[in-house]
Length: 346
Ligand code: GLA
Image 1 (cartoon, rainbow, N blue to C red):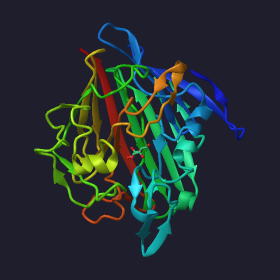
Image 2: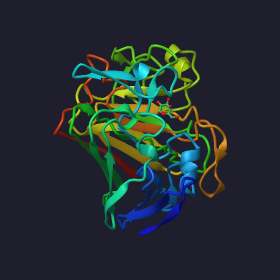
Image 3: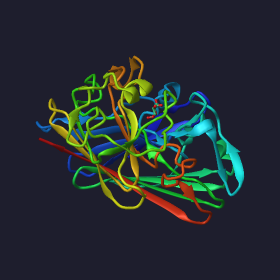
Image 4: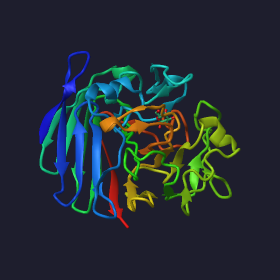
């Protein structure tokens, strides 16, 4: 189903697409940023609950710089000094986060109107042509993101990228979850389990990894057995001080490719449980520390830590960090990556 999602201030028109599995899960998406607008799932009493933060109109997505629900491209997360070198040539990106590049720059994939390649009852496929030099990245890139609502209340995101020159390909989705409902306030009482005992510590406030893959054991970063997000988020621990709360890459595997569990989150109040799976090497667990007070869907009040993200990705700054699996995409090859979020209630 397609309807208007409003006109942007620059005159572009955005549309809203609704897909469903006919079994209780409905998802709304806009072609602006191939963005998730609503994810409706049943709670423990069967009540339909919208578990992601968002807005009622497309322009609000551009006005608020939080990347709610958006596809990030060509590269999710940070690139040190906003520079990288491929085949002996150095490329300079926008410096938009301290001295670094974050989420590709001010005109990333999140602010484009994507073409809708196909739209079925339970799936929509968005496509984007990103020209050579786009945001500073080399090569003409064809990118696609397919969203499918599977029968078991799983939302599947399948990314593909191809380029005619060697480049960086590391798309993710920046959706903010609140399993109590998007309008239910803080996520600090959610329980989160991350399917790993390793993370990539950062050097300082600029949040660039040191290059080390460190154990979480015995620290407040340990979500391997489950932990309330709020339990230690303000602990006197360097890594948390640098980033103002959880905002770290957790290392799931050394290399991209194999599908595996990523995370499990649950909210007691609604009983909603979300399990994440991905074939990416890492996942950025971001606790929404930078959300400022403002109004979202249906007049809901959003504020700091009212949503959390699990952004599947290559490790931050991997294009510059020897020892991290590289997001380099060779000319003529296809990068395909899958992330799934499965919902249930208990
Ligand atoms: C990512 C980063 C955070 C923050 C958000 C956007 O998750 O890791 O530091 O920049 O994006 O607000």
